[in-house]
Image (cartoon, rainbow, N blue to C red; front, side, top):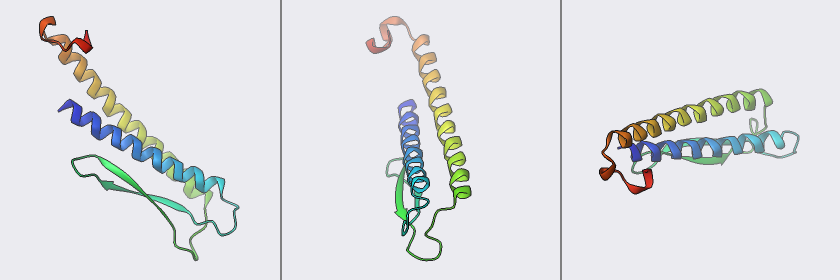
Length: 112
């Protein structure tokens, strides 16, 4: 169970990194003529977790970059990443507690 939590958390952290990469690209290209803003959709992954799908805005009226929107998206992405990190830390603490509760002969040698 703990390993599935950690796998789900890692997928969430990787998805938020992909989102942050798209935001960075948007900010870097704010003045690039013809640049289409990138967005990231979070999609449920088979077997649990999430994956990120990056797409470009269709060419047209709203394909440009708005720095205020990018800053808000960046703050939201940072909070989501930190939330995933907090869940991971809790899962690791649970694992440590489980390992310390076991007799030394029952512990996996990787955990001392």
